[in-house]
Length: 582
Image (cartoon, rainbow, N blue to C red; front, top):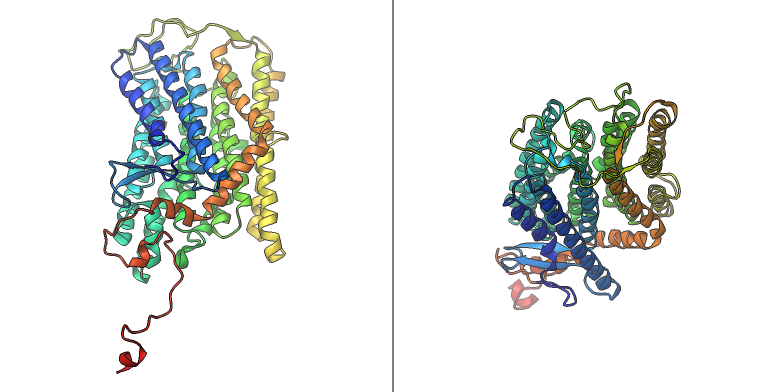
């Protein structure tokens, strides 16, 4: 069911069903049919992208025509808030499209031989996409936990794909950390249901208004547990220690698609912070905002120190992801505290470009560091894998025997690699006219516009945030320039042979970044409108709860589309004031 008749009825569930069905079908094929699985995977990703384009166009069209920006799909056709619903708005549509855009380059890169390092790579890849898209689209906390676990289970397999001691060690650490996060998630969900009687995210925002002081205190404890779970996933300091070694040990195509997973944590924090604990949440308004603001700034500082200090290029990518997360988390905190929508709109624009750049960085880091035993940035392990060989056996996985060459033997020049590396570095460092620069400039401009007219000065934390925006970009520029000069300019001797299949995906992502630069006005307009909608949670709640049934015998006021009505004056006695006095 959809709130807007112009929007397709069943298309909302397509980004979940398409990869889920494709991954299941691939299980019926032997791993020797790797090229067939690759084609099936690319078709599934293409269909998911087309569905995301249609969904985003419909949401944008509904907004421009003054209609609702929220679309619903009731799984099982159960009414809200009993049933589980998928909810589409501007933010979820944008995140689903970003996931599809990152998936295609990663799959193409895997065709260079990486998908043959172990069992069922393509099935796990599709299941991860289904979990990520489900997390973005669900409107229910329990369903969010289900999709969250689907995503994590698939990521465990992708993380360990190819075996090797370093990968196994990092994978076990990654598994332990995420099991702890899942435990915090479950505890938080249980406490939320115990206090509010619902797990629908829109209904939680309505029920929060009616909690007494004791129940509200327990709800704040639930929010703390949920915050811990998703701050771990978003890689916020000090919960980010797992990310650099994990992503550094994963295969390049796995790390490239896993770059979107930190944004799942950010998405949930953004959704719950503004929908449930936003400015209209009464006594709970702004709960946790200071943690996000301070934690985001410290996370950026930690990422900057890490990228300057680590010698391994692939681990630099992990610290770049930490910087990106800290930048957006701090902006969410400012928006939750009533800082306005301009900063948040710029942060959402920055998040799109930085995620694509980090994904491209993970793809280019391994070929650039290849055959460089004398360099500190060379990979720390040699797992016996040569993507150029026609026959090889993955370590510890003798059941898989790859007798086929990579999909293409075409190679590219070392100069091409140097140019791609320079463009990726420029985007990550935030040099003009890259989207990183545009996004940071929009954040700084929004900070001044949203805060200076109201108070006449900028808070200290905002000055610290602005400083870290600049310094983190400078730190990334220094670290990547230092590596690039040493690798592409100062070194002598033969250069490694690089497959075109390992460069084409990077070029695709750079093309996406370039399009974001050229069409920055349109995308900034979209993200700004998205930020405005997020700061009007009543619209979201009203659309989701429009057909809510009285299933909890709650007061009539609490079942109105507007979950936070103004308190009414005390009603007169039924028989009039005189008879009531008698």
